[in-house]
Length: 164
Image 1: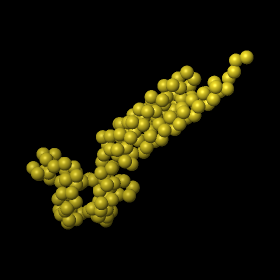
Image 2: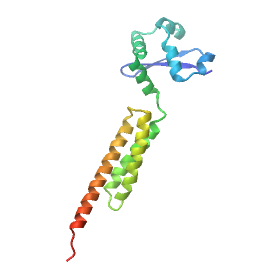
Image 3: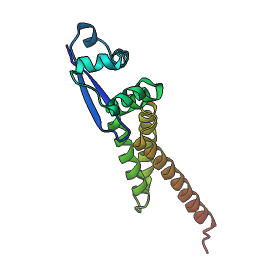
Image 4: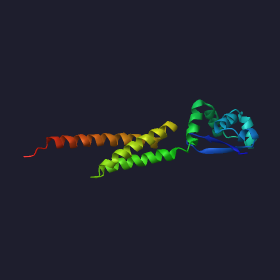
């Protein structure tokens, strides 16, 4: 029996936490089902369970959470399990871009950029608004673009080179 927590986020993302009593049916449900169950309560019911009167701010937060947009924001804030993948993609993108400007190491930047793109798109699929994943994708494409530009310049210089 795991206790169910309701987290009310305000506009400044300060949190008020209310613990609900354990129930056999709640412990086996997923978090979205818990959230739906909790949001089905009326304000008076939540006040009775919490044992305190909700402030005006908490009542407004509850109204916001009942809206579809509020539920999406809460789900986004509560998802923390995929940030490691986005952070790895960001590190790979930075290494790829930095390696591009180091002589004789520039060829290594292409695999790093491709890995950053693959992992970044994977992280973005799981969390569409993750800034680290989006930044990794941008860094990957910038690195590939600069690599292709440098390759074209090198080919142009080598083709115009003549032996006298």
